Length: 110
Length: 114
Image 1 (tube, rainbow over the protein chains, first blue to last red):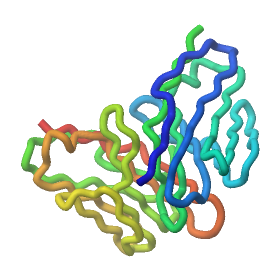
Image 2 (tube, chains in turn red, yellow; image 1 turned 135 degrees about the horizontal axis):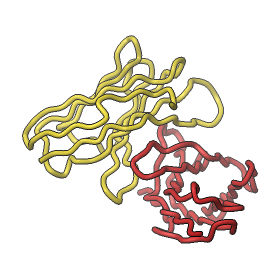
Image 3 (cartoon, rainbow over the protein chains, first blue to last red; image 1 turned 30 degrees about the vertical axis):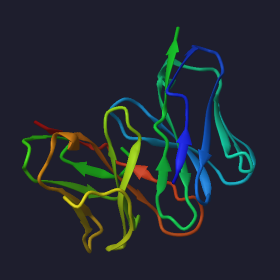
Image 4 (cartoon, rainbow over the protein chains, first blue to last red; image 1 turned 90 degrees about the vertical axis):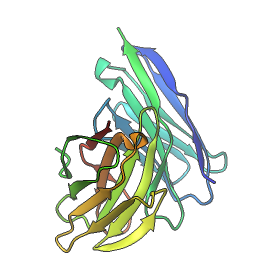
């Protein structure tokens, strides 16, 4: 079976840095995605990692270690609008869809 | 606006009824995916179509069916509805070709079964 683990909830302060971890155990792995989802809205694509290492995109960075089955999303200079759920998803080998974790609900406080 | 259009946005119906959710993918995208998101649950993959053909199937109930039409829009049919079918149903589309299979999601259809 497939399994993705993420913390259910996190709270961080405006202007700070927060790291959201994701571990996965899957039968096959093509790449790992992070999506942002505001309450009641559509998930929107943030980042994609296929090779080990860090991918930086503005205030957001994502890291992958394939050997450890581990990824994290790093959010810097947090803003109130970053309050949302962050979904970790794995693209499985030979599959044409993404397997999603249940997401981490981040609350940014003043 | 993501370019993926879903209708209706909201739907309230009774148990035992049947509903149809509609999705138009982004221009140029050939793949359509359907996901279900229940309260406090992750996105559950239901089914995928590519250029009119079923490509992959997830945990889709037998009471649910879908199809993709020649103009690439897709419909998800939910029948004999139960209370537990209340959820957000998302459609997503992706572009053909190599590279990251980035899914672009529509705004979702919120189904409430009473």
